[in-house]
Image (cartoon, rainbow, N blue to C red):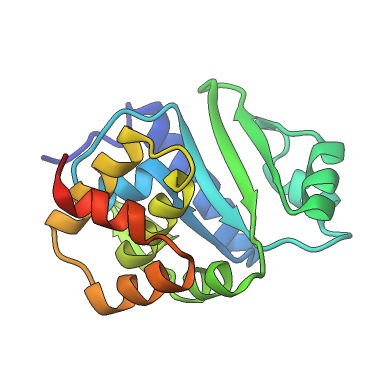
Length: 187
C-alpha cells in the first residue's frame, strides 16, 4: 500500500532532511524503525534515526543546512561530534524530530556504514542501512536488555530473508550468540 507522502509529517520530514543531506554531500544512512519499515513489517515510530558522518568544524555548516525550518543547537552538534553521540533537530512546522547519530568508526559501524544502500523509499531517494546490518545492529542494541521489541524486529527482518553468513560472522565477532539464538527460537 502506497503512503501518501504529501500528508504524512514523518515522510515530509524524511524527504526534506535526506534531500538537504544529499545536496550538501553529507554521508548518511537512515536506520532504526524507518529502516525496519522499509525491509519488514511497518510499526509506529516517533522520530527518524539518521547516522551522519561529521567531523569537528562541520557543526556550523550542518546547522545552517537545516536553518530556518528546524530547531537545532550548534552546541549540541559540536558535543555530539566530539563525543560520537547523538543530537536532534526538530522540524518547526511539522513538529517532528530527527535524531542524528554520529557515525562511530569501530569495525562493525564502519562496515555497516560503507555497506549502506541507495534506495527509493516510497518516493524518497535516500541512503539506508542494509537489512543484514540492521539485524546485527538491533541484536547489538538488545544484547544487554533482551528487549522484546528489538527481538521481534530481528525476527520480522529474518523472516523476509537475509544474508545469514554475514550476520553469523558479526554474531560471532560481537558475541551476540545468546540473543541470536533467542531470536531464532521465536519465543
